Image 1 (cartoon, one colour):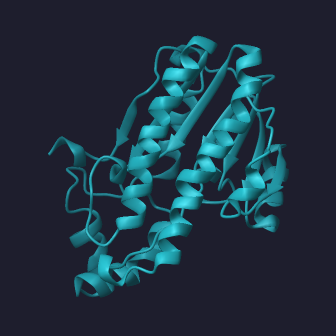
Image 2 (cartoon, rainbow, N blue to C red):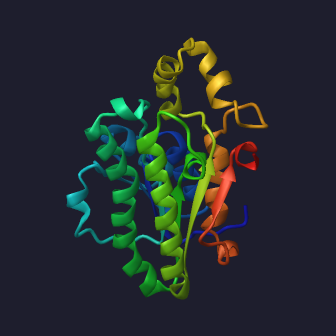
Length: 249
């Protein structure tokens, strides 16, 4: 990687585990000072200490508290997320709202809080960790799929508005990634599909992919590293799949 983020400040939400942790490490390795934002204070502090960054303990579901936020970051990675697996007619309304708050409303507010600083410097990089489910649907994931589809639109509008100011905005769309979030889905997936838990990865998670394995967090982070580089100045408004061929169908 030839990117150089020396002197840049980056914010990664959900940065204490999974994809966010891999992104925080990648950006720190490229020279950025990384703010590790996570609801888990102890984990965020540990990661920040490891990479020489800083921790921000934040509950992104409390969106009203972000309304007046101002951020002095040059790189924003909207990664924090959660999942609920349930049929539409049984889906808990509060769970639906929660997923949208964390994965669509909070990214909007963080982008809104970051753009004035980016515009003033004439440079900024926004990377939204979307999903193959930002481009395709799966049953039993109405909240997640709709939130990620919304994030795709938000990212494109940000690209159009940010372009004249040197700010890019893109989505990364992985298939199932080897993270705690995916592991926690297995029991629910087994229940709604009526199969044993030990068959979920093969029969649900890898059914649509040509490459029959989970994505590694570091593979996602490597693309984040490129998208935040100067070399990616013309890469904006796009959705970059790391899905093992899922969307080739």
